[in-house]
Image 1: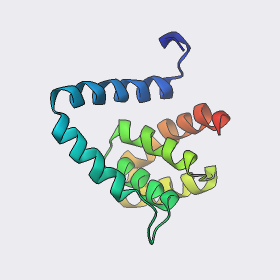
Image 2: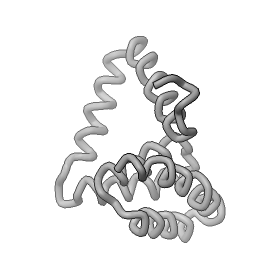
Image 3: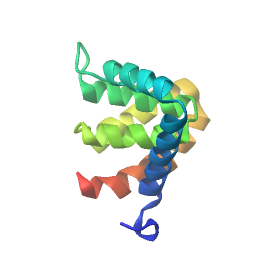
Image 4: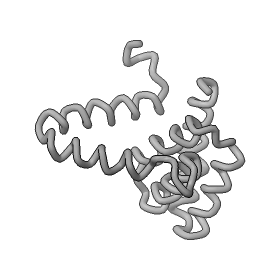
Length: 120
């Protein structure tokens, strides 16, 4: 797939992967440790992987982290979250973080769902 055929969501995810690859080459031990920690945090436990992705999406919105918002919207979809579950998560984030979270929910998250939902 060439760069021109990417949706904006896919391009952002690819940009993140490329950046992570470069970082990993430069600081492999830090990247390995961070990735191992993150993977452990998202393993199935008392909370399902889907619930953890929904939480991560809410935090991403509240902290205005665009790349994490995209990444965790995809994670929610990958774990089988419905559009309704994702949007309710956005609502909770907006109730907590106000208009900044709402602006990302009504733009970026809905764009990600539209661009990625056809792949699920």
